Image 1 (tube, rainbow, N blue to C red):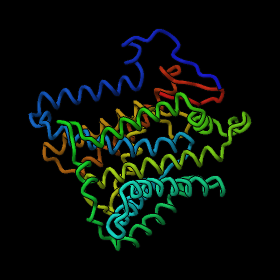
Image 2: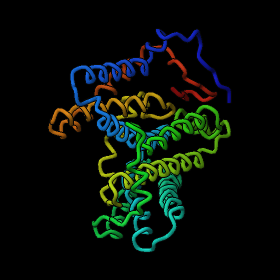
Image 3: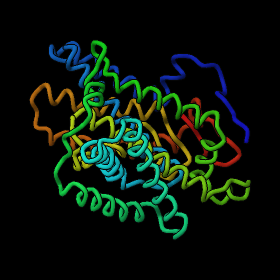
Image 4: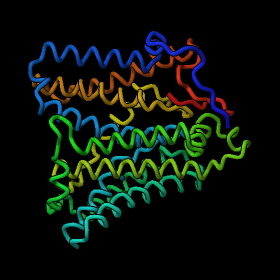
Length: 339
């Protein structure tokens, strides 16, 4: 596969003409407005809370993005995170196993659940939307059976201490998200698997003809999604100081909202690592603004749904009239791209 870089000279003006550039301006304007007109926004603790929320939501959004890149969906994202959390918490409370084993078991269970999603998808030929809708119910049932709908509270003190630790306004767990962003950028820009994921999403038949192991790639994408869901779940458990079976219940809508706002194409073949991060940030800023102004939190859900509709309509219109986007890396398969 060959990669084509930026065609032309990179300038601030050309960058701002992209979808990501416009989204950056919107986020910047929102942050500036809140900083000027809302005194509570720049309080250190509020920035800490905002960054923590963004860090967790970014992991969830990337978990959805890697599956959407193949042309699929992962409806079981929240259920995967919840079950992986419950497994980790159960090992701590019931069996008192060492922390490295707890972490390995929690993350490994997320990978296994992702493998199940991917395997069933390629083996049956049924779209991942239906498969993960079914596995979401199964994983949720397993979570409730283990916990009897009650949280595990005996979380190790080291996990809780780390989950609450911060440098000023920077939460320590957010460093994990930074590492994930870097690794995903390397995966999709430098590694064969990342290219293959985009090739499958861009044109599955063409990818198969060029030698891409389509079924294996789909399974790998789901496994990566399960891993990211498990990481997000573990960090959430450390934050709330409990292995709650309800963790992940509210992940699905924001995971789609962030990637759609960020410029990811639901048909597959294109991702937007920076755009997704900005999409998460925009949703986080909106939620934070409503919270510090004591607005009913149900308006957040309304705004998320509205932003999805606007982003889909505007994104479709823009992509149908503009040339190839800046920093889009395209391989031999049509539709393959990274922003």
